[in-house]
Length: 345
Image (cartoon, rainbow, N blue to C red):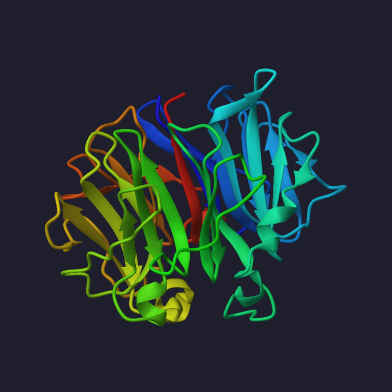
C-alpha cells in the first residue's frame, strides 16, 4: 500500500489510501517541519526534523513520538537521512544536519549521537553562508550512497557539496566545477556513480541549476538546454530509468518560496534531450511554490509532486499528471510542502 510522508510548514502529514480514498492524518502539529526520513530496515520507524525543536522519532508509524538527540544536537534540524547500507547491531545508521552547519551520526536509532566534527574543518567552511541569514549556513541535504557503504554526500546551503568515503569521519572538499548551492541531491540504483543536483546555482551564477555527475562527484556537467527557470529546488528520477528526470524550478528564491510572489514549474528531461515543461494536469505557474518531488522503487515510471497547491501523481514518467483527491484537515489544505517521502508499506 502506497503511503506518503509529507513534511508541511507546521505538521507532518501521513497520507494513506483507505477505502479508495486518500486520507491525510497530521502529527506534531505546530512544529516547523523541515525534513522526514524512513528506516529501510524497520517498518514504521520514522525520523523528522524541525526548526527550533530538534529531531523526532516514531517507532509506530506516527502514532507516538519522542524527541531525540536533545543533549547534544542543535535544535535547528535542517536535514535527516537513514543509510540503506550502513548498520550497527542490526540498526540502521542515521545522519542529522543542522544550522549552523553541523553533522551528527547515530548507530542506535537515535538514542545516542556523536558529532562528525571534521566536516566543519574543511577549507571552504569559512565561506559557507546562507543568504537570508548570511552569518550562518546549514546542512541542506544528506545523501548516503545506495550501493557503496560509507560513501556519503552532504550539501551545505550555501557554499559546497562535499563527500566522505568513511561514513563522515573524513571529508573531501567541494570540487571547483561542482554545485555551490545544492537543494536536493539524489542517486539511482541502476547508475551507481551518477549524482543529480537541483541547485540554486543558476540564480547566483552563470548556467542552469541542474548539475550532474556520472563519476561519483569527480567531475560535473550542467545540461540546461530548454531550462528557462534557473533556480532549482527538487529533483527525482524514474526508478526504472536513470535517464528520465523531473525537477521543480522558479526564476528566483522569492518566486520559489514567498507565497505572495510564488511562481514555479516542473520540467522533464528524457535520455539526454532538452528540458521540457510539464503542463498537463498541473496547476498554473502563478501562485505555486516550488514542489518537492519523490519516487519509489516499487513504482516504475511514477512521480509524485507536492506543493501548496496539492499533491500530484504522474504514472507515465512525468508527461501527464493528476491531483490526488486527498481529504485534508481544514487547516492544512494550502500548507507549503517542505519534504516528501514515498513508502510501499
